[in-house]
Amino acid sequence: MKCLYCGCTDRQACPSGCYWAAPEICSTCAAAPRAVVPGQLWRDVDGNARVFGVVRVDQVLYAVLARTRGKNAPRGRRPFIFPVESLRRGDDGWQRQQEQGRG
Ligand SMILES: [Zn+2]
Ligand SMILES: [Zn+2]
Image 1 (cartoon, helix red, strand yellow):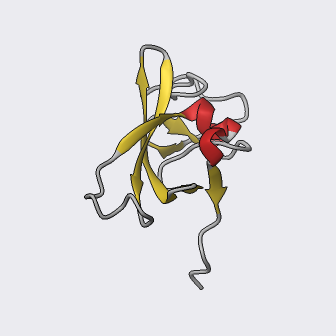
Image 2: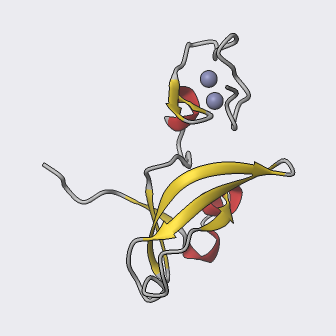
């Protein structure tokens, strides 16, 4: 396995050491500020969406997202992809959401 973000591998971990935080995303990158990692909740003007994965297409990283609620949700929770860099920049009003308290 190879990290999508930094390219570290099972044989060549990050200098400080790392483990797999998610498929193809190492713990170093998952802990980075503004990292986009499966399981996170993000939000734009249409509502919340959860990150289900990160895929690389032609050297560009995309987050795989699915709506959790909001006006687009009733049309089936079809996943969609959005460039990771655009999420990080906050294009279209995207912001990371903190999970509501779960104890
Ligand atoms: Zn990494
Ligand atoms: Zn690493």
